[in-house]
Length: 113
Image (cartoon, rainbow, N blue to C red; front, side):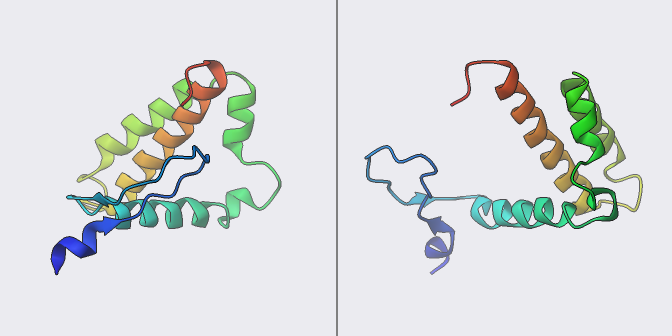
């Protein structure tokens, strides 16, 4: 049954004491989040991250993280469909840089959930 394929149990990263209910994902989010996780994990094995620090670490440390991340989101959004066609990897990069931007936001603001 197709509905069962998209219904997954949420993982609660912070125990709240509430019982979590299954979510019926309509857009294959569960699988796509897993693919994003695999992509992010693969970036830690690439040549530019062989040392303890990535260039992104230095950029964030200099206080330029928000602009760097949002600039890269725009770069890969603009590139999608133009360089190497409609490349899924460009969309994964958009999501990855958006996650890093969210991390920067949370480090700079107290409204993290």
